[in-house]
Image (tube, one colour):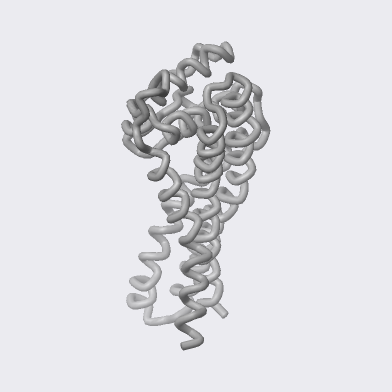
Amino acid sequence: MVYIIGFLVIAAIIYGPFIWARLVLSWHGTDRTDLPGTGGEFARHLLDQAGVDDVAVEISGSGDHYDPGEKSVRLESRHMDGRSISAVAVAAHEVGHALQHRDGDTALIRRQRLIEKTAKLERLGSAIIFLAPVAGLITRHPAPLFTIAAIGVGVMAIRVIVNLVTLPVELDASFNRALPALTAGKYLEGPDLEAARRVLGACALTYVAGSLASLLNFYRWIRFFR
């Protein structure tokens, strides 16, 4: 029973933030006819207002994000075409990343460089981990297995580092960029602004969940070698 309770507590800590973020986005994802525009239109408006006319706003097939390489704010169709609090808040959050890029934000640049340099290494690490048992079977000796797996675990640690670097970037985009823009322009007020604040918190919370999951996976492999 103690192990079951411990497992449930750990699962709640790790997956709770992700589930909560999804619920918040869903709760405030209902279209509102009283909102003046869609998330995509709002993103374009904020970019133009900030004088960032070289950044495109496009539909994304891989989640809401800002692509600094292509200079593009990419929104899921529900946020691009939706007229909801979630659509407006998510659009403002991703525009926040575009403004970070414009201002040469060091945290954003550091994260992007880290992602670019480690993407191939991360794929290599995953392949190494899958191939390690095969090497052990071929050589019939534990040394290749542990050596190759250790290399793979080291590469997996990169994801933990990326997530840790990402957290302050996401918090800044939500609360130092997007929320002031919503407040100053009086795009949302009263309960709607508070709802948007929760959505912006959820945007950052998804990366908290990612960090916790990465740390758990890393810890599992460290225990494997102990």
